Image 1 (cartoon, rainbow, N blue to C red):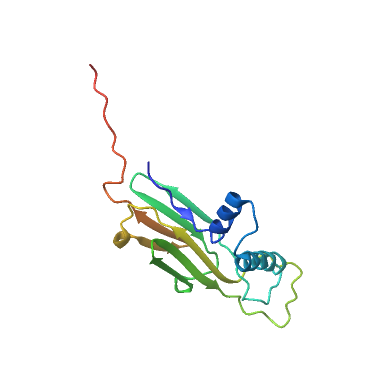
Image 2: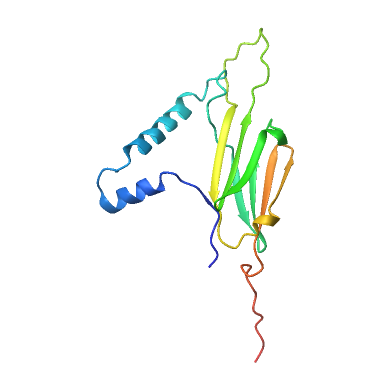
Length: 162
């Protein structure tokens, strides 16, 4: 069975420990940090002037016989604002969406667009040809293609009539 491309979860080890022992986490600092980040992202959602707030772009991951495709919606961003890296079997996508210059006469009553930094990391499955990974950016959508090695691709077995 092929492995799947999965989103990295820094709290996974904390949750697994909690599930196994049903006791308090031995890493309360990490849990507190995650909770603080969660509340900051919720309560700073409408803070139009704060570019230090983090946000998460919308991401789709699909799989074909030959590759995984990661599509990231980054409206209003340019290619130079995004960085993609492979580190220790992780696909890391990060960048910063800058706020447009605000006129001194503008007064916002609703702000739904997000600005600031984003960071997404995915654990790569085995069988990815790292040297052949490609990325393209068109109309605000980043598409990363992660080709599978030939040995990992499924092989169809024809059925003969007996």
